Amino acid sequence: MGAFRHKIHRYKSLISNFKNWPQFLAFKTKGGSAFHFKMRNGFEIEVPKKMLPPFKESFFDGVYFKEFPSEKVPAGGELKVIDIGANVGYFSLFMFSRYPQASVYSYEPMPFNYHQLKTYQDHYSQFDWQTEQKAVADHRDGITLFSSTLDGFSTMASVFTAEQKGEKIEVETLTLEDVFDQYGLEELDLIKLDCEGSEYAILYNSPATLLEKIKLMSIETHPGSGEGENHEAMIAFLKEQGLNLREQRNDDGTGYIWAWR
Image (cartoon, rainbow, N blue to C red; front, side, top):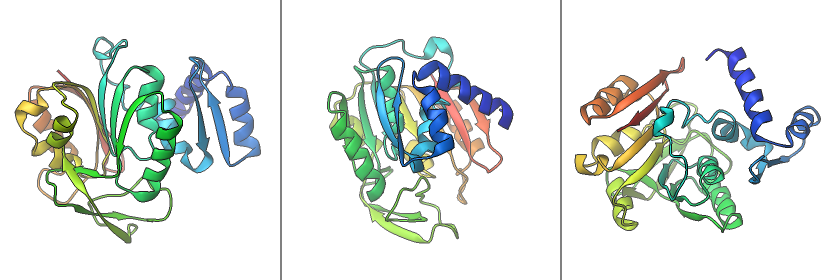
């Protein structure tokens, strides 16, 4: 989607989904530290200005949902959802705004992000929302993550090293199989992975019998240096698992994959 079309899509989404959209446009002009969004379906959320980009991805763009076939998107019900790389919780909250009866299991290892995630969880205590300050990986031995900051908001904590990611942190890990076992999941409606490079180890090393339990997968891919750590390899892997998919490649080497059974 070109930049102009993307902007038009965002404005259409803003107007159709938020009843106080005029106030938000004024906020963008006048500024402020946070904006209190009021959705037309009654859902409300306070968003700090610095966290607007990931909020817009989920609530304006619907990026993790947008390429699923309409007949595969659940109309409602008690969905089971795993959010890997939950950041401050906007995708999880997007799911609750659409599916208030859902159960969402969110994993975010970065301290600042998790603190905001936990704040949201406490505020929206009416939802069945479980959170853990851990990374999902292919083992339980912990991993090193690299980030531009450990003391503030970040959307780029990764297992891959880079010059702009000078800070590092050791974080606890668990496997996708552990998550299924912990919550007694016999099937999963949706898994979302935006975990800056860990998506390969998580999915490649999960048992095929576990992956067969997942109806929808929404994956952001990130280019790594290892064999199989790229968008094309992930597509090939998912097709080998019998999944149908749509995909998008971005100019920066990242991409999105929407896969379903």
